[in-house]
Length: 478
Ligand code: AHR
Image: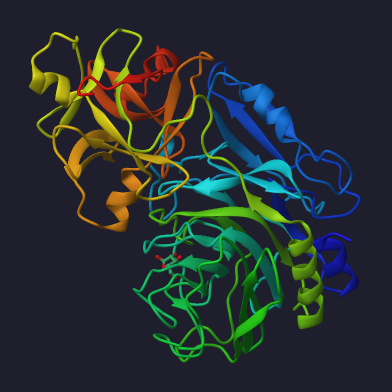
């Protein structure tokens, strides 16, 4: 039985069931998610390979071949119609057109389940999904449960990587108006043991790790690559639970009364659904979502134990983040655009320059890069300047810059790139690890990380595919 069959037999049925990786009911054969491709803005849906099975990722791979793809809809498998789509502006406006949040790349979070390829939802800061007109989700103080399978190594400290119950108008309407799973190391409100990340509950105007509004040492720092996170709530009672999604059983990190603060008992849940954002559309957070559900009623620990066993049996494992010709760590490379120009540093700017083997030594050095293991993710790469040791290509506000490594998590992530087989079937297209809708692009000879048809001038869809192709050749500096 799938997770939602298990919840149903425990009399706490799913009222929302979201996953881009697999069916959450044994009999489910419908659409899991929809993708939209950049080349012609058409869409297709991805369904399981068989009833109850893993997503048919090859449908996506074929449809998206040679172009970019975004996840436009995450369908609700419960039959309630609680689909998730691009989050609209709320208390905060999103970065996309009309104040909407960004959509996730369809290829940012590849995994395998029982050896079969599938894709999760990689939420970069600015990304968010929502359903403000959801049906059947708990309101007021009604009981509910939820779980999500997340990437425990992809998080940050911003507000708020959430999945669950939120306001129907996208605004902060007061304490107790939300009840979601939160994952990350935000320390503005609650914290747990260690430095985080922690599973907490976003109950509005606070992330809670237990009964105290600040620290609760019972909520541990977790860093499982695949993480099962649970939050459930009923009148004056709630719990935080978690586990390694790849093995073992759930632990309970909190189980008790509502937090010691006004407005959380009774709760005033509103019954909208969010993914990747806060209740008021705060969108600074990052994380990766593979699957999750919301139930009607308070699931028993025994029901959740059976769900965890089902998640473990799905056998989540990592998949390659790169494709095309492999890069050798330590090699000296230069990156040539179709225009014949090379990516070079000019002070802290990175531009496309005309360079030849007879250019002077300093220009040749400025167009040469040493391949390093990705500072932010060892499955991808970082590019250190041959001209400025310990300085790396990194993006900031979507512009590519050369900066010296300050040792921070932000620097490491902004300096990590995942080369893929080029969109033209040759060379490479080089994806930003932490903003996977974005690729290294030259635009008016300046280097950016650009999204296909995004809101910036340098995101222009015209010539996008050509301008993100790089021939990786032996470095001029040797
Ligand atoms: O509760 C934490 C956050 O506070 C909520 O997600 C958001 O609505 C508010 O900014």
